[in-house]
Image 1: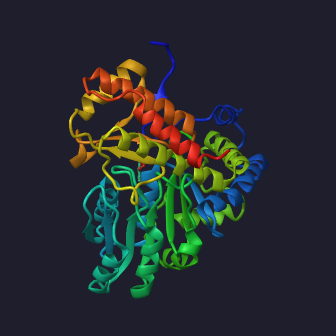
Image 2: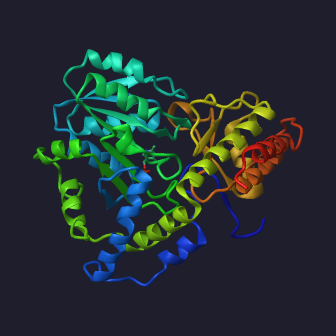
Length: 385
Ligand SMILES: Cc1ncc(COP(=O)(O)O)c(C=O)c1O
């Protein structure tokens, strides 16, 4: 096998563009100097656009889970009641974090592989008048579902003052996000998915309404106290040493997104999703989610007549192509293809081509090229140029 060549098609960490790699290799600068302030001034207004907000987006050194934890401890106090919508492993994580802080959790469980129904949640919420926050996952990475958070926010606001807190770790930057227009109170994301960076940064955007709640909360923790990040950001600085190399990279990521145009970034993700789905439909291999609930960033395949784990091992060994397995109750039952960030329709065609060969090699009789051809047809129909 050709050394050093790998095809990273897991749903994060995702590949890093060469210009972002180069940006991150810049020599270190003083974290309290004017260069860092300038860097933050360059990043902040552009990052807001990706979140669809006029509010500041806090940038914190930590993984996505630190972002979820920050949202929990800043917005909710121990013993308060919350509703957590669990559509997969990451919804469950929100509930675990809340429980770890002594928050009273009402879990709203949805079958893994399906999106939640906002009106059902609205109905459920009517019976829970003390709920202070509703937690939801935008893209549930463990199933490849994109949840209707826009409709959820509208439905919740009609019947409750609860804050809407959303985990957007695996899709913000890849799918349209209009936090302010949609009425989302806290949106969390992370660097290693659609933001095309290594893991290590998390982002938290907060609505005015949520700031009122946060400022009134005496238990905001220390490192994850979001008010500190906001107050420092107003002075173009950070409360603790920023992950400067990642910020150099983020500045370049934003430049790349601007050059492509955010609308085109979103279109590319939709296109890659549709190409991937068309390929598996053509090969008659079932997908976990239906077309409406499917995320632009990750697709889950649910094989009926071959072993997902054997297949993953085969394509890894044969091509150094990495895709993710199922998590928790879906372990061994599905595999997941990431098509986010630094990933193009050309990468999707290559991935499907390799997968067709991998399927033949594990003994599944398919017509070679059928999946690729179906994806190509989608590209011809809906591609950008
Ligand atoms: C939707 C979602 N939320 C949270 C996380 C956790 O992020 P991290 O692993 O960076 O802590 C992930 C990571 O895969 C995710 O996909």
